[in-house]
Length: 274
Image (cartoon, rainbow, N blue to C red; front, side, top):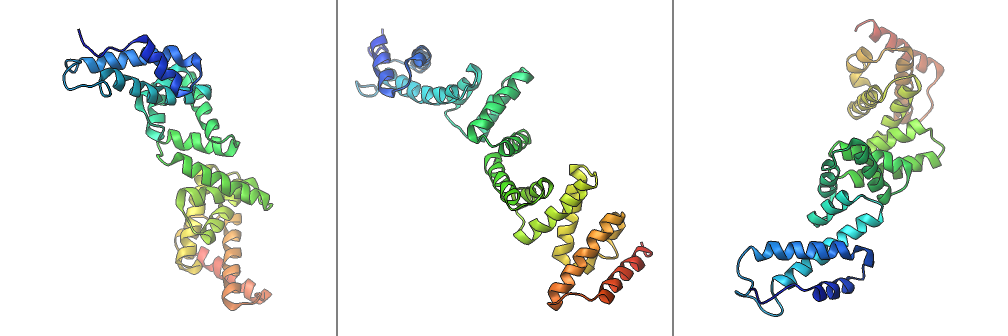
């Protein structure tokens, strides 16, 4: 018979020291006994152990860590399986949460638990929606990216921009890490595309093309990529306006009507070449 035994009195004493609600005591006791049983399988409970360092003490220390994670998740409203997975991992990073999500077989239950998890991080609806999307895409930095997305979105809404513009800017800064100038270009193109009935994928493609054009210089893509792919009237008009803006910035003055007409005629000529 092993000398260092795990007793009910020890379990209760250690649990009370955690300061955790007593409703979690049965779980704590169960897990402490499980740890003690597992550790005892490693060899004699007497060899190399002392009053201060033995399997009983080790099992209670492990139970302390387990119940801390378990209770924290349970208080958020999570189910037993989710709590057990996080507590068993002893971590609260993305991959621990991902395992907790994946280990649940019922699809409806999975989505419920993920929603609870997302809202526990930040109850802003924009954050929650973006976080859930990124989480399912297995993005390890889901929290940081969703937080940045939400911050950027609300900034532009507060500044009077449309939701489409705000979503476009938020996507550009959180997903692409674009500089402000490029985020604004992306957001304008994205919003314009959405307003003309394009889906997210099409709006993002236009935004990416426009930031590439901005990076290379408005005229550099004039005869090729942009006008070959984007030649609906509103797309040409958008490009025309961007050329005019760039010209005015370079000349540090407003363009005359003749100069504007010249740019429009140049675009028409290029359209005949593609």
